[in-house]
Image (cartoon, rainbow, N blue to C red; front, side, top):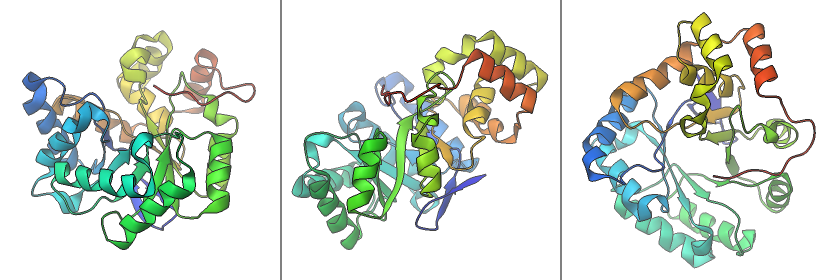
Amino acid sequence: MTVLLPSGETVPALGMGTWMMAEDPARRAGEIAALRTGLDLGLTLVDTAEMYGSGASEELVGEAVAGRRDEVFLVSKVLPSNATAAGTVKACEASLRRLGTDRLDLYLLHWRGGVPFAETLEGFAALVAAGKIRHWGVSNLDLDDMRELTASSGGCQTNQILYNLSRRGPEHDLLPWQASAGMPVMAYSPVEQGRLLGSPVLAAVAARHDATPAQVALAWVLRLPHVNAIPKAGSPEHVRENARALELRLTDQDLADLDDAFPPPAGPEPLEML
């Protein structure tokens, strides 16, 4: 299962996030093993950011993908406070050093701050020209921001946002707009950091499919052809569980039951962030 980028390149629909990884040395070996297991299973979209652990997550990812860099579609992000033209280049170069690689496949503005888009895009363009990033995109941008961004520049490959069963606001306008523009959404926290897993409705749907609630939550996000999901998993077993969500096809009854428990938005809602 893949998602098509505006560039014409395809990336795995299900990838791996690394937010809150590399925070406990006792978990490091398991987290590296988890990432390597994911690569073995084809979950080769790996997302990180300079903010995560103040760079420690990037270092962990670099260790995990060492010797396998060419298998990975590697994503990182620049903090808005660093997103001037020169600051974007400097931040990316620091991320590359921590990741132990010479290029990123996708570099995102982590959220909108006080720096004008034009300055950040100037930095992105310089990085593309230098071969240090292949593509660029954004994260946590609502519809008005996306319209402003794309009115002034083409080339944005994705918008990474908070989207899951309990955070359905983007379905009202942002997701349809991005789908019509041919620009995918990358959903972070697709299981709401585990908080969805106690839902009786998720448990009931999972029981019908001999699946787990987490697999149902992921399959629900992946039901849309223009959405990636990047759940974090800190152990090989957890990664294997996530990967099996790719085999799960929810029925119309499943989707109706989930809509009853987690209603879609009735109108516009502000984009949420974690």
